Picture 1 (cartoon, rainbow, N blue to C red):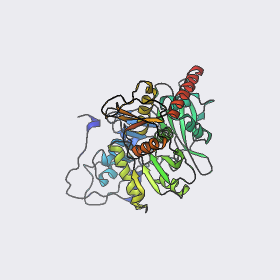
Picture 2 (cartoon, helix red, strand yellow):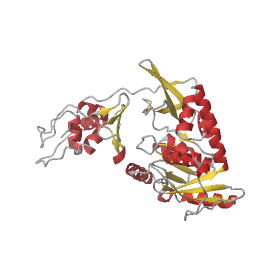
Picture 3 (cartoon, helix red, strand yellow):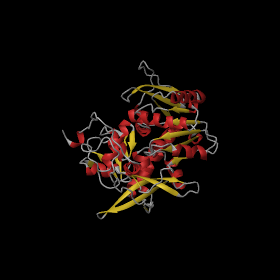
Picture 4 (tube, rainbow, N blue to C red):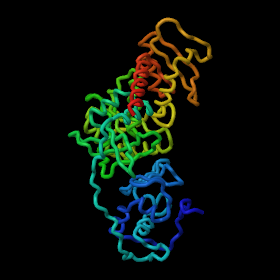
Length: 416
């Protein structure tokens, strides 16, 4: 059995393990990444963010935190030892203080000296800004399908910029998603590689998780939408804009791995008109477990249950996957016939306000309806989206925006 596959089980003990307050404090401060590396776990990657080779949904950060996204688990070394290695709290505390459990005394309080695991606080430093935004715009608009005007608005607000770093003589470019305080000062930054083929993701050391990336709406917005990532928040806003909905009627916040509700509470304080919190998390087991964690914490803070709900992405795992499916369908709109569910060609003559493409489970189009009445089209579109029905909505402004995006992307490619 390999070291990474080992799951330790508790054994029946005749006595009781003891630990003191200093040992508990030391165990709680211990770094999950350091523990994993010291105990033979194979981690992939270098620097601030690494993943376990055998479980790529398990993430270790340089500040000591640990996340197991597929299982909805998180914490530091003590949680890793308890949840992954299946130890009790007393066992985890003693192990992290260098105690051999096989020889530990069971009946008296031991006098083990805890390790000094305290580290100096990491000072937050902004990454170096690139001289232009070409790669960032190309990545967000072309590869991710985000709306160009929404991106530009976030750039103007200082929430998105292009960063760069040098390593081994090479320059690497990243999209930076910034969390701002009430004075507009950047307090946190998460990075996403925007070079072709890059899968780089990281958080700038020293970032304050109380200041998340946000897509602010209008001042009187009453709905706060919660997402796992900045790109998902921007994708949701893009989808609403493509549909003709006023995307500014909602505020959006990206949790970016934060297991606490502090970013949500900060947004509620900032927007006192908030009357509804909508969780738009990933459509998987990890996302559902994370929702339950957030919901429980909000209820404990006195948020009424009827103010909390979920919105599941109609297609795919997350909102950007849905948006990418949307873009692919619209790009091929000339080849899509207007039909009904019986497959009969129902192509209409005269002016068409818009069309709705109904998706099957495999993301292929099962039918397409055409609309000539603007109000009817908008009512049906809003109804389908509210019910989370897997549809792609095609409007003339969308097609015009498609051509504008293609022209911009051609310019970006030409200037690279």
